[in-house]
Image 1 (cartoon, rainbow, N blue to C red):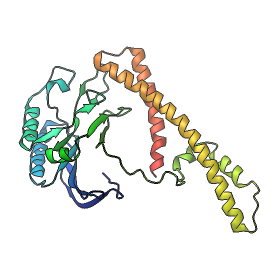
Image 2: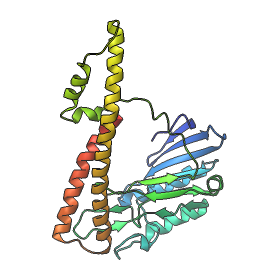
Image 3: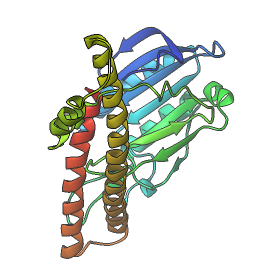
Image 4: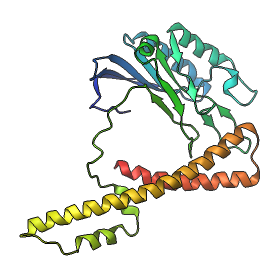
Length: 278
């Protein structure tokens, strides 16, 4: 878990078996609050320890609190598309939520956040975001939207406080490691670099070469990003469409094949996208 140091100050970090907790301060208005990310294991043997730690941690939260993650516990039978629902853990989970006056931020986009890969898949809502009343008073326009599940069994959740945020300097040139995966990239760089440029000395010619190369790569990267974005959107649209259809009925063999091919293509694109962060 990370934070934007231009927006937030981090004063304390606490880690447990199933959570990590940040004590934060907004630089813009000095608002102090707690962010908790949780992960509850799927096996029932670990759920008592998870809920007990959640109780202890909430008892130690003196500030407005936001808690999110994969709880691996449903709250109601409507959070599953099958009838084999065990109410034991939802009952205890809801008791914890009620005891600490927590509110769940309503999810938009989809009904479920997890699915298995069986021909007749099971869909469940296991991921969610909870907030204390004090945190809600600060951010009354907060929303949580479910993004495309893509190739994962869990869908990522996007929280929007309703306030504008710092986006950084978009004009700064940055070399992306993923560019090296393109077959023609090295030849492209060599072609631009070897072009004759005017200059009174080696340093001046080198600087002008760099200016020309940055200008060319910005345009090339913008074009590549446009193609990549369209391809990714099309694959995600197909995966989401078939995944949503599977919530209502069993997919045909052709539809399952289309889903597998789309997910394989999406995996390839996401691997390339991961290189941007190195």
